[in-house]
Amino acid sequence: MVPGGSIWIIITFLLFLSPAAEQKPQFAVDGKVLELDESNFDAAISTFDYIFVDFYAPWCGHCSRLSPQLDKAAADLAVLKQPVVIAKVNADKYSHLVSKYEIVGFPTLKIFMHGVPTEYYGPRKADLLVRFLKKFVAPDVAELHSDSAISEFIEEAGKSFPIFIGFALNESVISHLAVKYKKKAWFSVAKDFSDKTMEFYDFDKVPALVALHLSYNEQSIFYGPFEEKFLENYIKQNLLPLAMPINPDTLKLLKDDKRKIVLTIVEDENDEGSKGLVKLLKAAASANRDLVFAFVGFKQWQDFTESFEVSKKSKLPMMIVWDGDEEYFSVIGLDSVEDEDQGSQITQFLQGYREGNVVQKSITSEAYKAFRNSMYMIGAVILVLVVTLVVTIMQSLKEEPPRNQVDHPGSSTSPSDAREALRSGDKEDKID
Image (cartoon, one colour):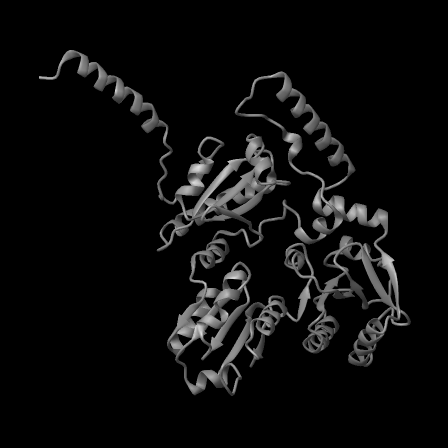
């Protein structure tokens, strides 16, 4: 029989433990989107190896359209061998998380891999989102042991990322770079393959590293040297297609690329003349890998092209070299590309640029301001609102006791410099 005093000690001990047990966040991988807040966010990202978080605002139209796509994707991602959990945070409500993770627009999407956040710029439709996120939980380098395994790997990888296949290449040669560039490409090594596969991928000796851009129907082959310096240079150059169409989505891919951009502005990307010109740009790009080649249609993205003093009266196509920020260069005497012998004109343009026969220009302030404000929702008015908001919050924190929730709808965006505005992209893009 337990003495009366001991019973009270036990009861007190159990009561002491009970609240802690009740307060411990419990999460289930049930295919549903988790709703996180400041009380359970850290526990969630420490519980799951891979968690995809949507920082949203209730009043944001883009967020509302994205929500059902996330609901669909959550069910498919939950049943993976290595599941990816989808969660959402009301960023308009939980200011601490907004500040901690530098949320500057809605929706902002981040994937936390073992607690480390990475911003997500991929597609937002449910099926494409699932395929995109699968690569984050895939092996850094897939080992392929047959022709069928190669085919299955490529089919599973899809067209969203470039694919690198090292034929008869030791995994250790590429593993470090595969980890470094995992967020941007698929990597694999083929251990066993037939002569038909060599013929299909157009390489005649091994080891060989083949880069595929399926969405652009492009392929290139690297035979070495396989020292890290040369190998990384090849990988970096092949993360982008030879000639990239510029739009709000692809513009984000230039974020980390330091190369100058040879930008060709055409009237309409879809007409036959433009398609022929793009083929010539690809040929030039293959011989000038220190530059990025891109094209954009005045019809497809007028606001962007007008930033380079292009109007309906401009003679197109025209070529410039853009630094990805506010500066660009025109080559003297080559303002536009004539219909005849365009290949020679591209060669002359590049030669003129390399020889320094250029006029440096800045994106016109008014056009650029309009472009920046309309496409990226960043401007002087927002700056004033955010500064005012920060001052107000700081004063309230001094005057009032801390609160768990601070409503601040004016914090949907914050100012950033022109380079990040152009390179990072709009947080409120339409769903792909």
